[in-house]
Image 1: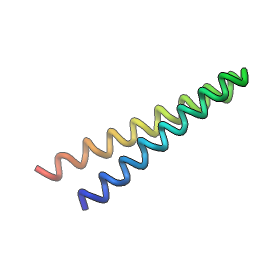
Image 2: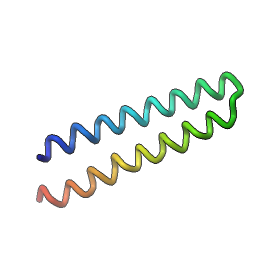
Image 3: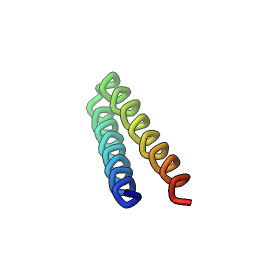
Length: 61
């Protein structure tokens, strides 16, 4: 079960990276609102990955 949580967390981190890349592209296209949206979504997904790993670490020990 711990390996599944790790895989899901890695997926979240990769998703957050994709959101940050989308934000950079939106900034390059001068779409400020879209860039802000992608930055917020990326931050939330990254926080979810950290929270998922943090809650899983207590179950392992």
